[in-house]
Length: 84
Image (cartoon, rainbow, N blue to C red; front, top):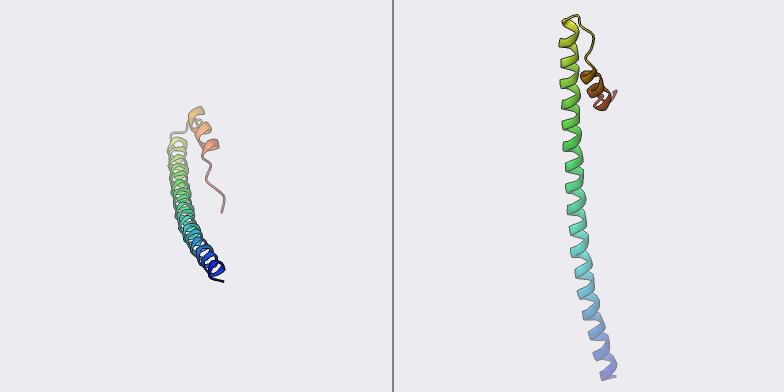
């Protein structure tokens, strides 16, 4: 009985250690996920700003009465603002 109780105690301690490690890794994964979401939101904000800047440039270009430059056409296609 003493050996079995000792074995059970050792297994319980090992399981507790493994559970703590799993919880630590889970917390790390949540942190990484949150960082990735923040980076994606930041990138989306930057792309939206680029799209707005391109739209402004297009408007200014149109005011000149000239055709839209090929560069602005390419940028508009690349960074087209998402339609709401």
